Image (cartoon, rainbow, N blue to C red; front, side):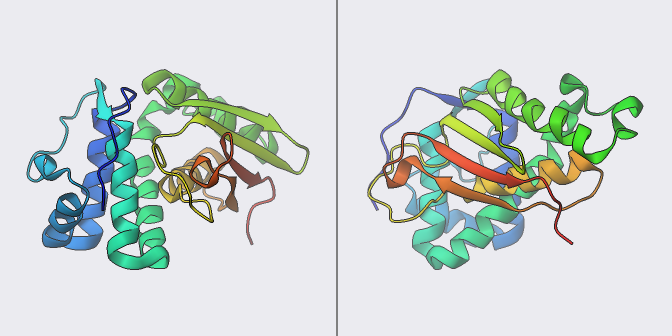
Length: 211
């Protein structure tokens, strides 16, 4: 597996560290070390990023993690692990940013579901644009939201794929929507992906919760 050249764009250390810790929780220490070796980022073994918001974790390293998961566990196994890591990352870190977006206070919690989504989905996009070099916008399409990542860390530097690959981002969104909505699960599907030749990574969020 070839390394991915550094991008010069960065994720905050805190979120990267939580994703790495979540993966280790799922795979165990030996499994995690094998992934880091496979992805040519062995310098991260026993050396996860510090718990701060400094933008210092290169998009290429996030992308190589995602690719190494697929290489080691196959597309289906890698997808499941990436989804779990994404969900854990939101549960562990990003909900603490809710106050930044006004999504943590009581006035927000008593809003009807459609109003929570109308505020909460763009707020999640705004948080990522504020704390990282990821660029994200949201479009309201009636029955669904289009959550569009214009500069995506999860598939940075990848090409030639025949399907979307940004499952860490899907997991983050799923858990974020659960938090914003007060416990509902939502369908999130990646439609477009830069890794398969599209201009952006576009995620379709159905407004109607599952079940």
